[in-house]
Length: 114
Length: 111
Image (cartoon, rainbow over all chains, first blue to last red; front, side, top):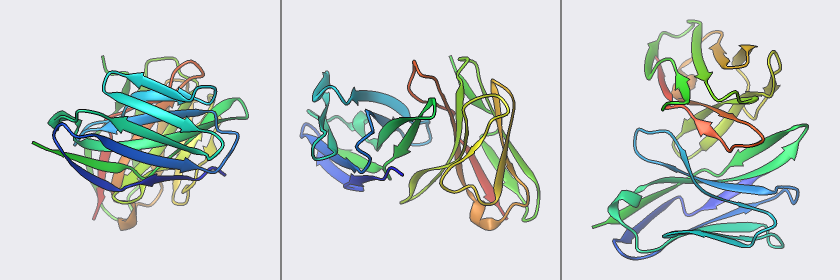
């Protein structure tokens, strides 16, 4: 089955700096890569996603890149703010038997220091 | 506009009790999932269902069962709760149109 590795497990940055979280996946059939943000005590929420036919996608301060050949994808947050502090999960999804099977990384706890 | 609702936010149960965790979604999603979330282990899939009365084992199904009698409701059952099942349980639903939508989670403590 799919295996998703996520690094680093914790990340501290100064406010205004950039943060990068990296993930690798094993199943070359995976074709959808969402990222979720989970604030303390709240549910994970989708913040950005990318499909396998796209190499990069940007939404304001957040961008995601995908390298299908190397099977890795990354989340980039620029000009970080304290409200970006949360746990971020990457995921890889493959269409299997009529549904999308999603495998999550273990999460990265991001702390933005004011 | 809560779309995936988990019946309890916090639960405390005794070892050996039968525990029911309920999840209801109002988005007419075909797929529903139960995950447990533990520090350092991320989100691990327990069971999922892609249709009414259908269920599939995830990565860690041992000690759990599920029920999906109606499209909008997916129940997780701990037949005999044990202390190693103390965890945060997250329900999610999805369709081919949408990504995942998670519930707020149920923090279960087994004493």
